Figure 1 (cartoon, rainbow, N blue to C red):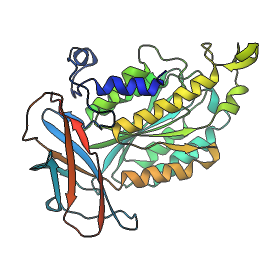
Figure 2: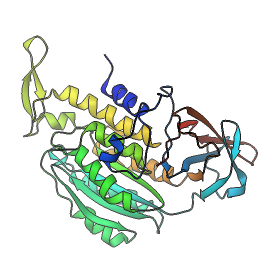
Figure 3: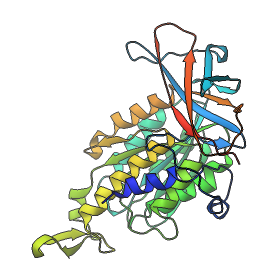
Length: 339
């Protein structure tokens, strides 16, 4: 049987990617011929295709200060005119989304300290939205670069309650980041387990993530042992009649945690992000530092495809940089589906 992640990924590869539509409008779009399973999807806003690009030297170090004229982008072997370029030095907006449900109730200070360290590693003109979620989501600070405001917002976060993860993702993408222009990302701090969402689902939020132009960087931490002692824990009959831990809605905890890991991996893969793992809430500084570094090492290219056919056929992308001894990383293919 296919895993949930494989089934969800197949769903999106069968569906054209349309940005700027409401969920109801997006459902009205007809599916195209499915591309190969390893095809990356590039977000298309009207006719503009945007492609994040990382450039490293042979030692794996980021190459800064590249100019637009040094980049060349090809689609199916035909060079395209670069109509949009953002250097790695351009500021970005980050939605810092913190899971503060029951499983984190004894580790709040560790979470707050790590979040503050992450903000300290951003550039002064980068903006941050601070939001916390348990059974509901609360925006503690709207997008701002004011470190005092952000610090106060993080220190005001409280824990407790069940976990409406899908709902939080839905609100951040569709009610906050969709209003913001420029480079943007979601840094999602969670164990990945949803127990309380209403309306938003795994499928709907991955679809929203694919249609968004925000890159998602989940930081997954292990709360299984804490969960075993949580008041939200229940018992369920496991294999051969044994007793097993279950979530508040009756699902076996082992299955819920497995699905959570698949979900976070899927969010990262479909948006060009990367999952970071932490075995302890006391070791969060390093994952957050790596994400801050990744956010600083990405150029963004945009072009209007010369081929305007909307037949759902896979298109190959190749990015070259006019600089010797560099390694260029970018998405290799996509399906063109303009608004």
